[in-house]
Image 1: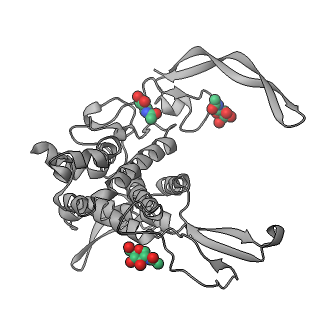
Image 2: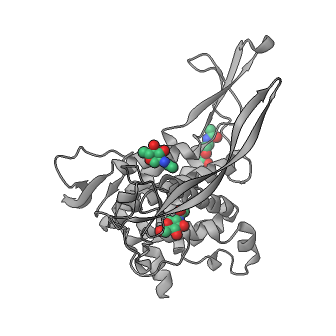
Length: 343
Ligand SMILES: *[C@@H]1O[C@H](CO)[C@@H](O)[C@H](O)[C@H]1NC(C)=O
Ligand SMILES: *[C@@H]1O[C@H](CO)[C@@H](O)[C@H](O)[C@H]1NC(C)=O
Ligand SMILES: *[C@@H]1O[C@H](CO)[C@@H](O)[C@H](O)[C@H]1NC(C)=O
C-alpha cells in the first residue's frame, strides 16, 4: 500500500530505525510469513533475506550500531539523529538529499557490512568465515595466522541489501546516485581502516616470532571518520555527460570529491522548529552550554530563542586517595550545577 511505497523512498531513514528495533531472527523464523513479514523491504531485499535469513540478526545489529553511532556523533547538534528513533515519521522527510541524509546512508551501509563481517568471523553464518588464506611470512617479517576479518562477504551483503532500494529506483534519479555514492563511501571508511593485530611468541615475551591478523577498526572510529566527511561534504548537482548522469561539485571552487567523501544535493533546513510531520524535532528543551561558541552553545543550539536555567544536583567521586597497594578510596560529593535548556 501507500505506506510500503513511502518506506521504499526513505529506506535508510526508516528501515535503519525499523530494523534496529524490530524483528530478531527468531521472530522472523516464528512468523509464518517469514521474510515477507518484514515491513518496508523492497522485493530484492526480501529475496536476500530468504537466501540468507541467518544473517538478519547481523543486519539488525548493524542497524543498531548505525543508530547508536549517529546519535553519539550528533548528540550536541540541532539535528541529533532522532529521526532514526522509529517509524513515527510520516510525510516528506525533510532531510532527504541533505548532508544529514548522506551521513545516515554512509553509517548504515558501514554498520551492516561491519556486523555481517563480525558474524562471519565469529562463525555464526554458514556462508562465510574468517580469512585463513593469508598465510606465510609478510615482507615485514611477521607470520600471518589466525582469523582475519574477511570484509568481502560483509561488503557484498551490504551492497545487495542496503543499496537495493536505490537501484530499484533507477540510476537516473539524482537522489539514488547520491545515496549509492554515500553508501559506498561508508563501506570505504571501513575498508580503508583495517588494522593489523599481532601477538608475540618466544621466550619471556622476546617476540622471536610475531603472528598477525587483520581486524576491522572499532565502529567508533568509522563514526569519527564519517563525521569528518560530513563536515567536509561536497554539495553537488546532476550533470549529463554523454549518456550518463553524474554528480559534479556545484561550484568549480570546490575540490573534486573522491569515493571516500560524502556528497549532498540540498542545503539542510535549520532544524530549529518542531515539525514532526517532516521528521524534525526542533531544539525546544535541549540542554545547551552557556559558554560554548560552538553548535552545542545555547546561542546556536537554541536558534536565538534564549534558554532556561535550573539547578541540578550532581554526585561525583571526590577527595580520592590512593592506598598502598592497590586501591583508590573516594568520597561522594554533592554539588549544585546550573543546567541550561532551550526555550
Ligand atoms: C572472503 O570471502 C569471500 C566471499 O565470501 C570469499 O570468496 C573469499 O574466498 C574469502 N577469502 C578468504 C581468503 O577466505
Ligand atoms: C534529540 O532531541 C529531541 C528534542 O529535540 C529529544 O526529544 C531526544 O531525546 C534527543 N535524542 C537524543 C538521542 O538525544
Ligand atoms: C561548555 O563549553 C566550554 C567552552 O567550549 C567548555 O570549556 C566547557 O567544558 C563546556 N561545559 C560543559 C558542561 O560541557
